[in-house]
Picture 1 (cartoon, rainbow, N blue to C red):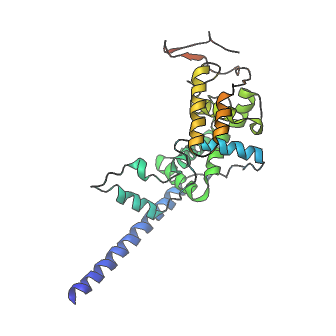
Picture 2 (picture 1 turned 180 degrees about the vertical axis):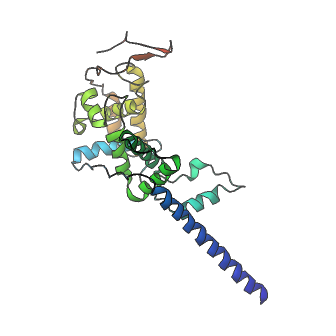
Picture 3 (picture 1 turned 180 degrees about the horizontal axis):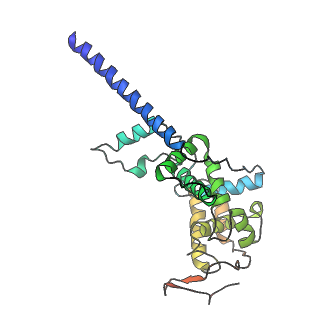
Length: 259
């Protein structure tokens, strides 16, 4: 029948249009990525069981927890756009592929590093293309390790491993669960939760992260309770650490310097 013939042509046309659009998206991505001066290398992984255990504790404290990286392909973008179509209640946060936020953070860090080397600035669109590339080639541990190795802590250290030595006086593999949580709460908010300046607030943040790790299944109830009872053993406050902030006055002060 004539209507069946027309329907067949319509389906073929819609399918062809979809293929063309997906091909165009991939071509635009490849063209934009090619403008990035250089691509980052994967961070050196850690293999020792003690170090990997600390990394697993750290990752279990994320809220929301990211367990894997979802590769972004042209059809991923297309499906996301469809979910944002009118008459739907989806928002960008709900359709964002898992792990994309970590990839975008890594892309920004790489952009900053290239800028420090004197290369041309990476434009926002190129950073997004780089983040897409990272979702296709790096896993979640790669992205977390890149963060731990390159995100500075209040301009004092260049890696979380240096922060463990200077702030807690121990190597990464020697930290207990409570120390990992304390280090992470300072790492997430070094201005307000530095244990040398705001010990109570830092402990509140530590305990919150420990409970999150338990909720995420990263630690047992016994481990949680033991870590909550632990008192932090700090090294001396780093000499170049910024002055302590006094929230009540909205300023800074060294009067409470707990060296």
